[in-house]
Length: 440
Image (cartoon, rainbow, N blue to C red; front, side):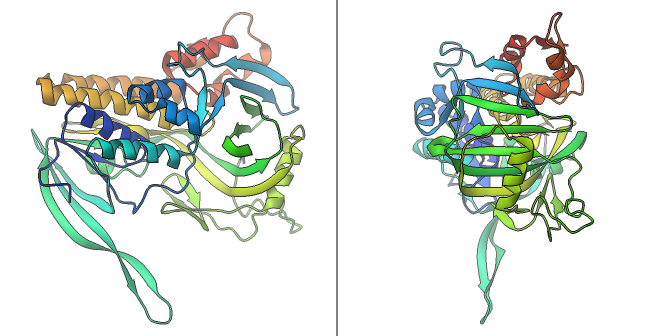
């Protein structure tokens, strides 16, 4: 299932965070296994932008140049009001400060996953797809693990039905487990770690489409009275436009007179984890579909300044985002990174990018413990630092406040801007300072 020898670290989840953690461990000489219950890498995903700090991490792995070849470089974050007036601008740090990139690199998550998985394979580690962790029992110096290998079972005569069945089950022990298995993390649940909401959920109508618009090198954030809409340029003439839908529900979207301005008639979203999903599948998730007319309606109402033609639309769904934080990032020999420990809104792409940094930090700690016999105090310090950072990013403790002389509109919207800046840590504070904001 995972080779002839049990791994020293089992990574659960083969998204970008899990792949980076496994690759960092393998490069440090740690025997690592990585499993994912999906049957292949994601064919599509929401996350799409790599912060400057993430590019620096990929540079250490020799992957940054390949990422930049496949990505659209964004060097400016432009903030507008809903009347189309440009209110503020943040320029990404120069090449030397950003690992030689000087940009946020916009690319599809599945393309990033392929680069990381290929690098991991070259390091001698293959992802075990279709493998689900069903038991984790922590002990003093190890974790008891049960993994089921899944297989498709197709039955039926006139109409075939395919179900997943357990083909094989294996029990073994590992010294450490890293849970990078997303917001529905099985590792977090088996640790009995709470995952409380830190604010109200948000719904977004998300469209990816080809356009003739010249989007330059900027990500455009548009703040309305109750909305935060985001326009990201993508490679090959595409863009992604996300429109926030306050108080969204399918039934409320249809007026009493029977009109359906967002093209939502007949949708009955149901909730799994953090997103409402109906007919379109992304991995194992399903999302409500929007009509082409809904895009044109939203562009007319929210972005009358958008001058490009709408050509091929390859993605048009409603996505629900919650804001949550784990009560701890692990304990004993089981630790969390990425969306397993936190989720937030989509504008600043903070959850995945901070998750990559968490994976790097956690891999370094575990490699030092395993190879250099360092004390295990590092994982407890990791937990403390992670909670402190996310309490700030989620606005639970502290936030951004205006400096003296800050633009009044920016000052009024300081709290709303915090999750929309594509950076974290010192980089976020440096960008916020450009528009007259500072950490509280």
